[in-house]
Image 1: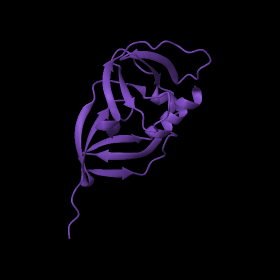
Image 2: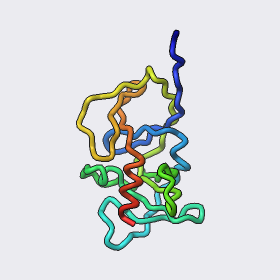
Image 3: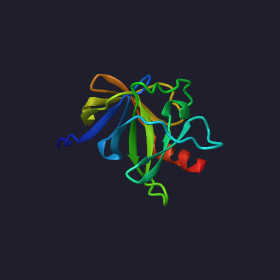
Image 4: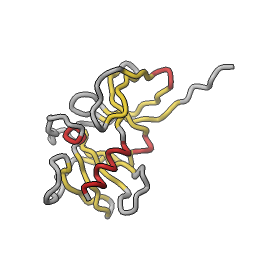
Length: 150
């Protein structure tokens, strides 16, 4: 009996080093970069907040929060608005700065393999998907980190 191959609609979100690969349903929208309104006493990775669809959304630098030293290049940047995965009251969305235009992918089980490399604190795993090296982020951990900031 053969197992049916599961296909997941995904987005490849460009970053400085390796792109992030996430299920398409986890991202509400990709918008042009705009400077977030800074928050006092926030960690360096918490860039502030933006107004999006009449909602205040916190914006982070994934690279800085993931203990990478690379600062975001805003000339090519976009903002990925993520849906709430933890179903926390008061946080329906959060945002991550990305470095360009995402690509849609249809990922099958047999087209993705895990790579054995050291992971950052916000990474579930490093993978090779359809010939490209990528990172599967721990979206729940990113959201928890943002909630701990207030």
